[in-house]
Length: 111
Image (cartoon, rainbow, N blue to C red; front, side, top):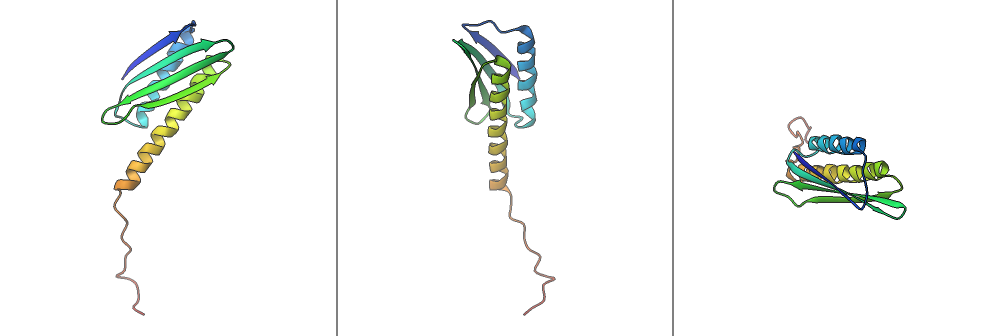
């Protein structure tokens, strides 16, 4: 998966860049169709913002925003939101296409 990290109006430490890449790579377990990811860090006054955009093959992109006082906590919050979105979408897809379980009526006694 291709990960693109952008910093706007700020400097992001190298350790945060490697952590970002690791966290994004872990998202493949929730949806293997994830083709690429874009992470954008922005700093405005005393708030730091993180935006995560996942491009999924055959589906709409998944976008999550978060803002906190530190980039690390903003990233954690955005990753958590993306994870919940991917889990919910996958669960809805499974529930929708799952065949109903038939009840075994052969063992039931007639009334």
